[in-house]
Length: 513
Image: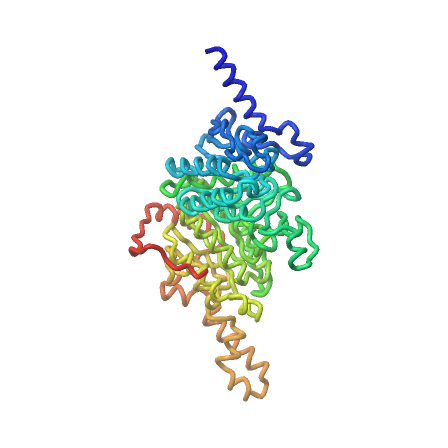
């Protein structure tokens, strides 16, 4: 018995070493954490329970028979983050490059299955060279098993992907199917085909960082929602993100204790400029409305004309979607529409109420937008809001023009409460453009066309460049002073707390992809 106990102890120690983690600095880049260190910093102290530590690969081809290492390149298990159950897998690049094959994939799918059964988030700490070539199609089958579970779990439990190193080829599609991707600057990258293949096929010279680094995916492709300067900062980001979301689709998001106080925010009184064409920073509006320092921006560096993120209002988690007048005047374009739609759908899937702050002059015109599908991409945001059943509140701060007014959570597409500031302008288009169309003949025949245009522009502005006509039709529930916004929102969300919507029976809708 003593011998057996000693043997088991020896195996356990071997599995913790991971076949090479002690040589991490030399083999995998200075400053990188090991797979187990990443889990250690992520989970509550002493909470990690490993699964499958003694698993080995089953192939004897191409020299693999001499490389049977316990754990097969991935550490899997469960633990807690701030006392809440979390499932996790961390790929170990020091074992066969963290390559994925049959046994490796089975360990990952096992924790994913358990996460679904128990209703808890799953986090993937990705650091892999890709499919294990020596195992051939078995490796591809392993990826497919993971992809399938990503889709089945979508909208049921939160799925988070942290890119700690390389992710290439088919491996990129699992993170892409999850809810959020985080990347480490200058040490992680994602691409379907690497720089060498790109050079061979297209003759383009490009580095791994330029092709698929954190900066590229944060600003150009929008593939990643968060980037961090190092792994510890990323892990802290994971913890912060988890604090805003529930365990699963059947639970409410976590809330913090809150003591009601003076909810007026006088800092909002003069935030809107006198000139309707002058920009202001919508993030300042968000900061005044939500609980102090609670705004956690998502997709910060991508499609900056729309701002999305999590926040707390009176201690409760909400999702914020806001036009940004300080960037492209806050217009909606292809990237902003898809960014907003994805965030809205996540919030709706996980019972997170939505707050929309609107100042939008319309959709961005131009051949580039039309030829690249602004119609179907803009429709994604419209679709996302229309299907959302969580409490939805809109505050129009200034411009709400044309189709963009409809798309940005208007009353007609199911918003529960719509407020407007006195500075709101709700119309088909701006006063000048409308006057040029409506009074075209009058202006053309006038002795002084410019003077007549200004006169007619003033007439149209007086009629529509205010929120009162919309309020008289019931499209706006209340015109409020800016400083009253937080107070009204707290009351409205409390009123909507038990909102329930019965959707039409269907298999699923046909999102305009």
